[in-house]
Length: 129
Image (cartoon, rainbow, N blue to C red; front, side, top):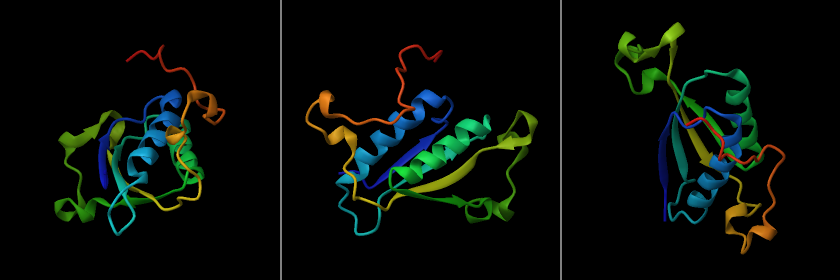
């Protein structure tokens, strides 16, 4: 079983948000930890629409999110200049906990015919990465 997932720079395209969250939910679903299983996510807000979409959909799929402030993991809470992106954007760290298990992950369905996916689930085979 998986209790913690570490991920960074994985939320860049709208088409990958829903598949990513379904995958994370499936991996954390059968966690053996006494606490709620979580993903620790490093994310840069390059596109507000994708950033907002991720957190909105995470909530819809049963996750609770909490921003981990730099003071919790950096000396004096200051992000070094070498760790900032163009335009003074820096990586933000979030704890994404699976808190609601009332809806089974779609990736536990027995066949693809039974899969229920949201309107934002898209074919990702044409992404430029």
